[in-house]
Image: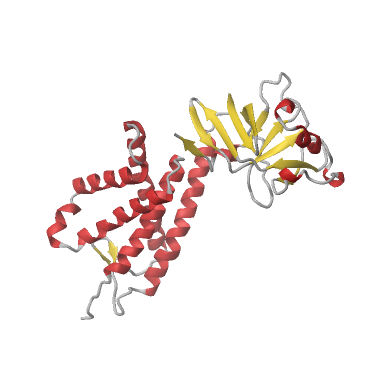
Length: 306
């Protein structure tokens, strides 16, 4: 019989990185801005559970009730406790993410018909002590792929949940300027920067003229091909994005990279700073009921503001 050797430090390290990605995905889905320190501590605490599987005196920790209690502490360490509703939401989402990613990984494993051995739910190691090269390669490559796919699926579901029938308060800050506007989520606005892939929210410069610095407003009126020098204070923040509207040829739109964008919906604040401001001089609404068109993709990378 071939002797079986387990390198627990290697198995623990693998579990640590997997737990770190699971907690990161949970925070992304919940749109919670969690510090790197808390993510690290939460993953470290979660990965310590692997030791309970190999210490006989701690076998009680493998009971489902103890697993549930242990997961509660994982969420407390990572997300803290603000209110019972948000805590339960984070706990249930953590379980859901685990089941979704773990199920995807197991499904991919059986689909590829890979021959791996398991001991107490962990990958077994043989021979050299580092396990089958195929099984380890499967985990190291397969898990990130399932992680990325799951994140994209969650993002697509989130975009469907956005409400398109109401205006939202929007606060934008850049340099020393602060803009206060009414925004409307436009499902037809799919404009993104071709290089950074950031979504573009289109601002009606006519409605917000008084809130913009005069030099920036004047510059935004210039055509891209004939624009003079960029104002020094906006160098590195201004760029050009090609776009096309119905009945017109391809045009170019000046965009500005903001310092911060906060969108308020039903009393909740979302940090949507990973976006660009499209400086448009075309009227967006007939009655001026909103000043900017929000891109639905803005909410996919947003974080809730507590």
